[in-house]
Image (cartoon, rainbow, N blue to C red; front, side, top):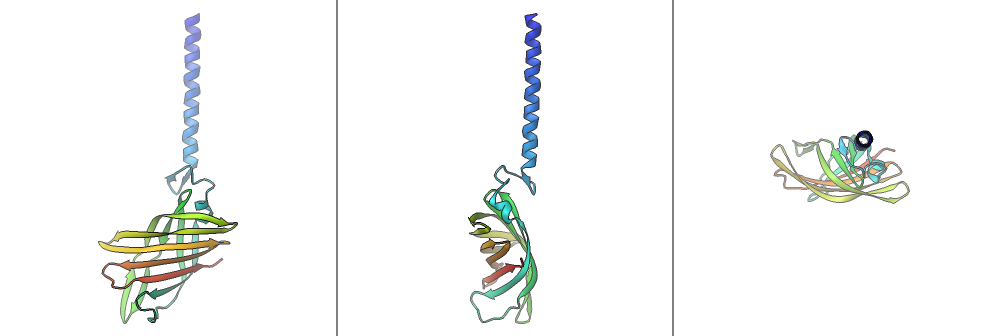
Amino acid sequence: MKKLNLIVAALMFGLSMLIVSCGKENDAEENKVDGVEDNDVVDSVALDVAATYVGNMDVKLQEMPNVAIPSYENMEFRIVAVRGDAVDVAFPEVSYDLSGRIMVLPSFTATYIPVSKQDAGSYRIGQKAYELLIDDKSLVGSVQGTVEDGVLTLDYSIKYGSMPMTLLFHFVSNK
C-alpha cells in the first residue's frame, strides 16, 4: 500500500511540474514584440515610442550648408521596440539631385537605439552611432531625437560609400 501511495504521489508531482512548465512557455510567447523575446519589453518606454511616424524632413550637406536640397514630405519612419530600453529605427530610402546627378541613399535600420522617459509624454531617443554595410558600401552615421506628445523629432547623419560629404537630416512627424 505504501508503494502505491508513493507511485501516486510521484505521478501527481510530475503532472504538476508539466503544467507549471507549460505555463512559463505561454508567458514567454506573450512577451514577444515583433519576434523579439524579452521580458523587459512589456510595459516599457520602448513600447511607448514604438510606432510608424509620417512627416516632413529637411536635408543639408554638413560641409556645404548653402547647397539647397529640397525638403521631403510624407516620409515614413518605423520604430520597433526590441528591449525595454531600446528600439530599432527603420530609415526610408532618400534620393536627391546634386548638381544634376541623382544620388540614392538606401533604406536601412539602425538597431538597439537607447530610449528613456523624460517627463509625462516625453521620451529621449539616445544618441547612437552606427556603421552598416549595405550593397558592399559602408554607411556611417548617428541618430538622436525625442518623442513629445506623440510627435517624433529625429536628427541623423549619413556618410554613404565614397561620399566625401556627410548629410544631415532633420525629421518632424505629424501629430
